[in-house]
Length: 336
Image (cartoon, rainbow, N blue to C red):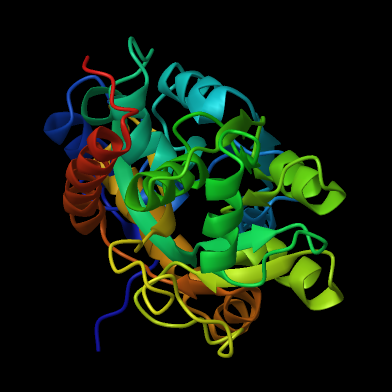
């Protein structure tokens, strides 16, 4: 039986050959490391959300496992504000070597381009899809003292008090914003939008009663609902949440076109070598699909939903088309 050791390898094999092949396949990336040596230093995940949000909680759980797997520190860099635009712009200006990645979600990639003019980034030009990670249940929550225990009662309250009922969102163009605008378009009510710098302050202001209702992801508010600090009126998916099976969907509540879901994923700066993207996707997928992470996510009300870079790219395009139609219907579409 023939055996070999690393000392016996010639110049045409091993990591050196992989690096040379990468340089030939991806001009301009000659100095990029191969997957065999990735990552070479700490990896930064830029999260466009404040600490404590549902997205942040999921990201930090993943980071812990990736740090253990790689033997390199993985850092969450929270950059909230401007509905994620600040964070996205920072990532697009980063060196495309796999050591800076974007924690992305629905509004950043599929909604912002349709509700904001002159964005400092273009999703297809400046970002490279890495993978989808989760699908999030969107919830309709209200302050517990609000005299509304069903979606229809909330609509009736808003109809009786035009523009007086306030709703909070994680920012202009966020899925929590468009969900409320879609409800207004579907029911003919007039409500007033109060945008915040991220989901956490919007949730806190709903709890305190500064706004009457909001559409957060269920993972971010499940604890508040169970403690009674928020009242859950409905969920917004096609089927009921396994965490709150007694709570009806908005479709069941009489609003058949009120299907709104969120999702998350990772994006890299354009120009990141494909083999580095593949290495990140492979290792992150193993973490997210592991039994421990799957159980933890399910408990939060989030479903693991891992995809390949190609699948994620096609999904983003389809979601962008869908949310463009919603933005137009809700009257918040801005032509570019």
